[in-house]
Image 1 (cartoon, rainbow, N blue to C red):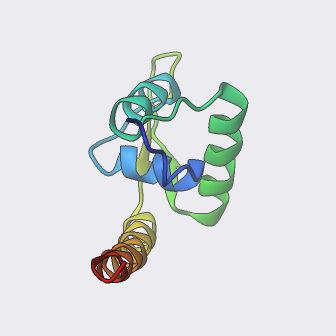
Image 2: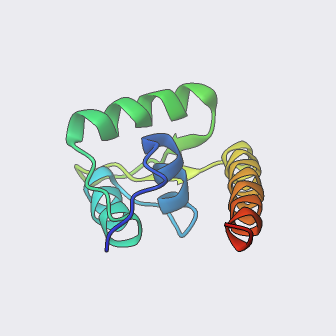
Length: 100
């Protein structure tokens, strides 16, 4: 069973970059592997643009055609906050299920 509870592209991109810098196609593959979600190119690059505008990721200089991105310190903090909130929701739901 493949359950895609977390499908926010921005969150998935941050999670992918938490393991190291990647270019867009590598992020798409990584997200599909760990999250079971295949982001389309338009969705991916639209989310990348928004993440850059927020200062949560940064494009790295590279001489290659594909430009890698990395998560910033602000991006790490945001991802940690989001994961803590998701953890809180999961724990609350599991407690409720014990009484179902």
